[in-house]
Image (cartoon, rainbow, N blue to C red; front, top):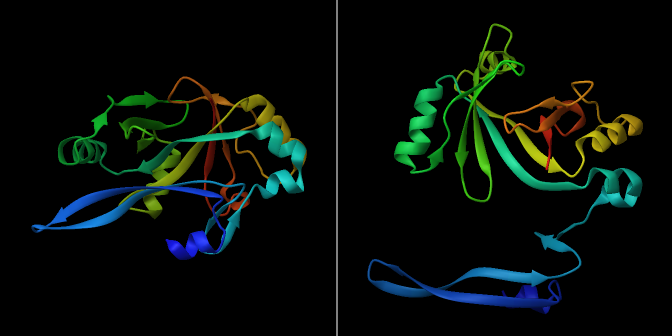
Length: 196
């Protein structure tokens, strides 16, 4: 911790110590480091919005918000739901069929975000294609909120840098418009944008 501060990475640091007990012995651990800095550094890497530097108009129009959910495709929706609810103690929603998207969903509430469990619905489900290649299931996509989905779609189309899988937003599981971005243009990740 001292070397990080000494290197000048953080302008101000607040450390909140707690005491944890392991097998009768106690030791001091640092549970949170809160830093205020113009850039976040991790492992020697600086994190800043290169999109803002490269194309300030596109970045300012997208206004990426919080992580809404991580979607996991599952071959057995009831089993996956039971694992999160009964074993891990999470709050889970009821199953919801979304015929327009070819999925049945269950949401797992994590407090700061959600997990969306996906199961095929109908003969032409894109989730079935995913499960045919990944028989045990797995992470299907991540969803990030945007301030204005229609402006985001127009900006992405105009930029020509990221393909949108649907020509216009559809209503998603939360009753809000969503679009999916092509994984080949997003570092191999299927990215969903949802109206905040």
